[in-house]
Length: 181
Image (tube, rainbow, N blue to C red):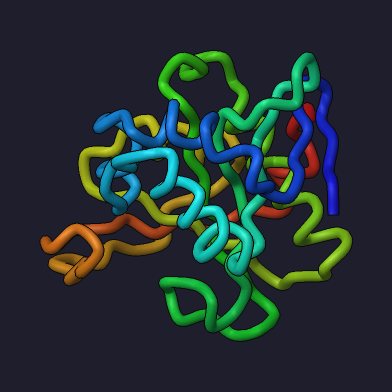
């Protein structure tokens, strides 16, 4: 599956994306805010492509101008979600390389993957979550029409060997339909 927006291509991750993934995922401002450690090498990024991103169905977020991976977006449907959802619901996850922050790119990608989930996969609900203090992620969710639903405190997160408080949001379908792509 490949999805297009006005500025982006959302496509499956490829082994050849490992260097680009490492370039952005090694930054300590990116991974820890989303619950994963910074990447340590191109080989580490290749392993993540092969064993995490591809199996979960995540899509590389690429600029149309060069088709190079600058971030990731994906739907985790049902039991694949961290939220324990039924099979007709999904959680959206995303991240973007720091040089591309503040340009509206990840909201554009999130809106498109949510449109796909609702219109083509016929999902009943799409959820999202952000960790306490991750204001950039909170703003993305607001811009995309997600509304606050509840908070889960003190969640053990083995990947980072710590606990997090997460704020869970739910997509308001009507707001998504009114959003520009």
